[in-house]
Length: 133
Image (tube, rainbow, N blue to C red; front, side, top):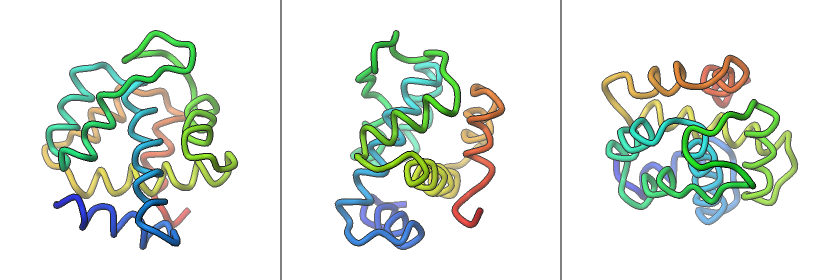
């Protein structure tokens, strides 16, 4: 999937007003995911995405933490996405679900299953819920 196509699908699925909002949602979610999962797994996912999007996984602008593979729960995940996207937490949770759903559709080889295995159950729920819940 190409960058413009992926961003357009995030924008449509999340019902965002602009492509800029979709870019922000992707950046916020993937930077946070990149902090939570092991570096090698983040790199594996990034390699399957358009470069501009995948690079967000490699940024670990940590909120006072230790970088990739950092341990935090869903509440912290959503709070970090909210802070990065400058939205409230319910909106951040929804945007994260949409972005993660699109990452699953844009990748192959079960990489999102490996991501799900690397995070706690409460974050895994974000992967499983998708944009319709």
